Picture 1: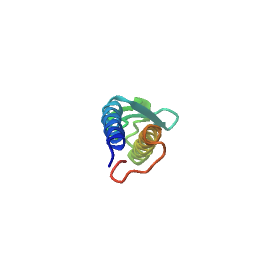
Picture 2: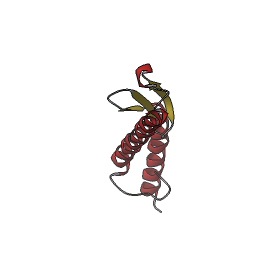
Picture 3: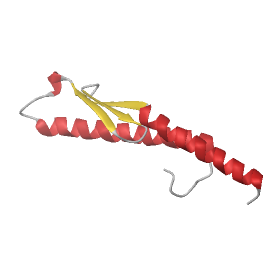
Length: 101
């Protein structure tokens, strides 16, 4: 590997480390049930908050609330992954690097 390629690889590694730090701070939100359930997740696919409108809490229909939470969590994680993939692609120029994302 010549010196120029080594320098480029080191720069890419530095950008990837910075991206990982940014993804820990970046958040996405998803809702279900017309906003009855709101989920916030980081770009590292960690759920950080779940908000439930008290009006959505019906002791006679817990299954519906469970479905809303599940839908909102899955949508938030999908959005987080999409955001991470877009940011990763911007750094790598669309090149797929095994072990990253």
